[in-house]
Image (tube, rainbow, N blue to C red; front, side):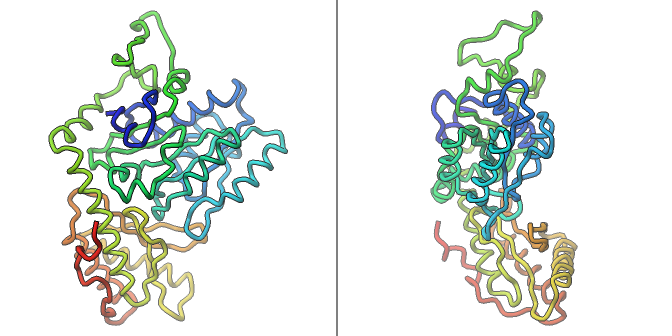
Length: 367
């Protein structure tokens, strides 16, 4: 499974990885590996860089790996919620002048807030020029590389030094199935190989990998089977078609939402996640936040679909649709649209505006 994941990402044959409980443990393992590869034993001058949209598990991983919170730099994102490379370069240069040691930068391959994808090729180039470990958080978005559109959107992922994937997201598997891939497999081994007299001798045969030499867990469940069996039974093409459908559904929903009066698209879907906001005229920002929270409560109270919200760096509360369940098809999206339309009308105290979207024809989008 790990070799197949590495091939999907575009990694070379010497790449190695581990299956984990999820993205959090995978991120921690990546940070520890980068720390041991790029920093001396006294590593407290090391500095990490990530955007203000990066999942909080990366900050937690840095602290658990021994870094003070002050050593984690959160770089501003731009209007499309992607890391600002100019501000990143400024902060790295400033830290070097202060005698600190920049060593790791995180690129987002689909953020939780808005689904944004950082400029991965440019980040890879910058990391190489500055001798930084380039880590890609593809927990949500990584498996869209199975699709043609996903591969285009995630170009540059193959240049990361490490990548986190969550099969329990993009492959629709049970929770507790995450993965970390490291381009240089020996780096993963160097960071995690410890011996004891009561353990079997190190296994040098690459086909007989002892995974406790590649990660933090000695005792662990058999995660490979739960990932391998569905693919063996249904084939990769089934998962590819399902992911393509989710891309289509997200674009269909974005088109329909643009037809609802007073709804503003905040983040168009780069993959299968989109963010939007109710913004009636002549209302203050606090009032708009209240209205959007009310819309969210009204939709979820119907218990036909489940939407979530988030707060952007500028303080705005926005609504999110994330299409990433194998059970989600067009009829469920139509339910979501109907409930949203009704909730918006109720929140603003008037009838819902007529829709001017695709009229429910998913086939108009193509695949």
